[in-house]
Image (cartoon, rainbow, N blue to C red; front, top):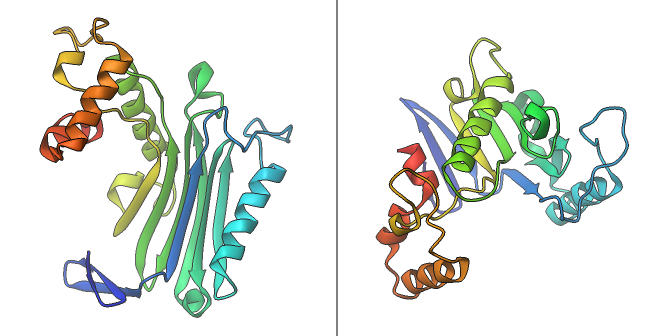
Length: 231
């Protein structure tokens, strides 16, 4: 994607999709279990839209103003997402679909982790907006859990072409949320991949802070779990 002035141009081969800045707003939140938004007793075990969820969505729309309309919104327990677009773009937006996937406790039966998806077509270009809350904590087992959950959302949230997963059919995908990937320096990990318990949490915090203060960004990027997993 390249930007110029107040416009952004997305290129897909020889095709171009041009949007002025702020044409489509993608607002997401993924609260942990101690967060503000809590699940409610609903007709399914996903929690549905609680009063806090409705307040969150209404606040987003109020902040965006009357120039925007709601394209779609989705809730999975503490995972919230709303997609808004400028009113003048409405005739060009079609094919809106919403999905949610649970990947949490009890083999994915509980909605404390998972993802929500909004798919739309803008002038023939397929766009996907994803918000996920993945497994927390340090160590190889939890990192693999994060990977598994992300792949599960990608595989199960079937929108658009149901025969193709999220990763292989859209012109552009926007994936955010509480991904929970950690910064992990080599001396924090034993050769077998387990955590080196000799390094305390406070020592880790000081090490990361020192790298940030020294602006050694390549060192920090090399320790980024997500970058390594994507690589």
